[in-house]
Amino acid sequence: MIIYIDENDENKRLDSYLSEITPDFSRSKIQNFIKSGNVKINNTIKKPSYILKENDKIDFEIPEEKKFEIKPQDIPIEIVYEDENMLVVNKPSGMLTHPTTIERENTLVNTLLYKFNNNLSDINGEFRRGILHRLDRNTSGLLMIAKNNKAHEFLAEQIKNHTISKKYRAIVKGVIKEDEFEINSPIGRNPNQPHKMTTRDDGKPSRTIVKVLERFKEHTYVELTLITGRTHQIRVHMKSINHPVYNDTLYGAGQGKVKTDEQVLQSYYLRFTKPFGNEIIELQIEPDEKINKVLKYLRS
Image (cartoon, rainbow, N blue to C red; front, side, top):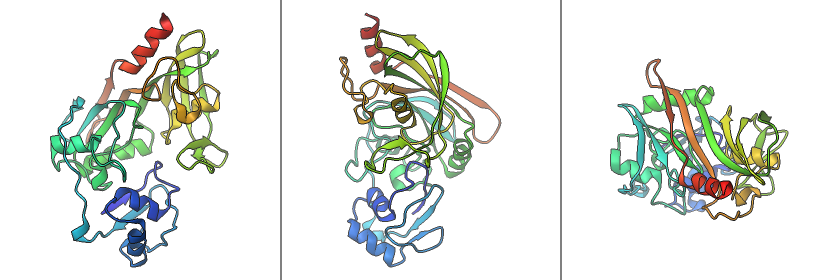
């Protein structure tokens, strides 16, 4: 298994990360594999405590008898765009992008395997077949999928170089006075709560453009353009200016009067270059059920 680490998984311990993506092995078993040389980082054997860095290449030789297979599932999913090398889906809120140690079913990867069998890229391992980038479980919207490794590399290069345009819709707490502005604050792991991110001076450069669409008495409807793509970037940036995303309890918004499954946030716009040419693909979807539900309440 060959895996390339992106910014979503950097700063994790090597043994913890491998335990997460290969749930049939205990952490102690993973540690034994590492110590025995079954795992190499950039062609070098490291300790189980090694802290992963972005673009690290993991070469993990898994014993044949212990390989874990992900169950294909016939779960409805909206395909917004498709060609011979890739597709873009509208991931619903509540669906994980790929399996985890705890949850191995009902993810986007499960349904992709049902629809496309093995005709998906495997650069990021079996648990992430076809997956180029992720959306949080409770964030809905547009997500690119690669059908083969060459397409994966082509699109991943655009993500790395920030040449893909991504826009989100969100409802946030408080009234934002400025019509349009940029948040330019580095983001890194929260040292006290590793499952969360935070703004910090030694974090990775992170930029979000905020544009006000509509103001209400105690809330604001906004469009957010990602210049970079860090883990939880929008949620962390909006919290940092005291305007957390509506119902984002992880980042301090609390539960609003309109109940939803966490943050009211949607990836609604994508603009990218189609693999292997110069054709520009531009996609946009309508506001999702959560946004419409909260907007209806606020407008009333």
